[in-house]
Image (tube, rainbow, N blue to C red; front, side):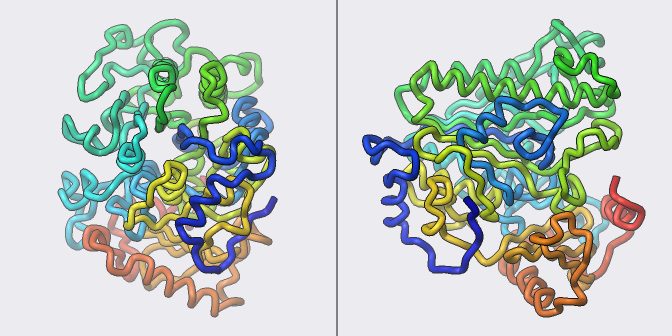
Length: 504
């Protein structure tokens, strides 16, 4: 099944509500009006487009996620909300594309004249002042919980997580804390929990830790299973932003930590490659545990599971080898707005409602999840969201799917902008006066042939979109785009150097 974007009037909200209750292929007539489903949203960290078996991976074993795709729908053209974790998670949680979102980089906003960076987020930017995804589901009557790399990786003041939509939360307070898989501390509902057993060097330093210490991912999954059991009588929403397979902080060593390397012990790979693959396969087993728990509790057909990633592959975790080809056929990686930095896996499973073994080519993005989950929960999407509901596509009704003209991104390291317009992709680096590269993704998914000189009409339209998509945002003053490259900004220069000398 191929879902392609078409320009047409939006489907009225009432019609979409009827669609939610209409049985799709494979649905039973008795389920024509099911109760609102539970929702589990799993977001991997730096998982490349080609890192899963169902997206072409041949070496890393992901049988549970592959089975999830066989049981449901796999999106081929799904995009993260940005190309690094903080702005990507902000865009998803707030349902806003990067031209409107309050956070647009992992770095803090620039000081005037690009003379360094602010020391803290201005109150206008964070904590969020608009409705978040957790609040949408909480206001719809769902029990809400978040586990892992909390919120957008930006610490919130004590007592504010509940206010922003989470009845229960357990995990790391900040992005940097989540680099350590055997943490010294975690936070549960604003209370700090310490793990003295993780303090010894033989736990904190090595990549293969064995039975020593407390492994964060096993702990989170155990808590998720408990939350499912406690809330099985009422609708629940679980957000699991796992830290897998993100690498570690240099101060802790460059080895991703796992209890063991599982099936890869005898492979003729580097040590770092084994650790990387083992982390993904262990995450895969965790997905399987969640699905088995849903079945044991009689909740399998009452629960939608979504699995995606916050951005593309980061191959530095295994020293830039080409072993896994984790970006698949795509160009670029994390920190670039080429396809390899933003096109990510997206799998949806809802037995009896989402037809099995389906593939969707509908271009969609992380900021669509707010409208999608609002539709599933039976409430109106917040007025500020840039997203559309993907429920019609999920239920096998592409003819009812609302379309959009374009998708837009901007990322402020390298001052990048990108637009997807049908099969066309435009990307610009350095500033609003720099040239736009143009690629036809239908014939050139690897973005190898720049067609800008061949199609000046498309380039002109994309240039207009790049201007209009961010026009009027109240947050633009914190995220200015220069006209030309600002080579004196060290983080920008790192992008330009890779563009000129080759992206590793």
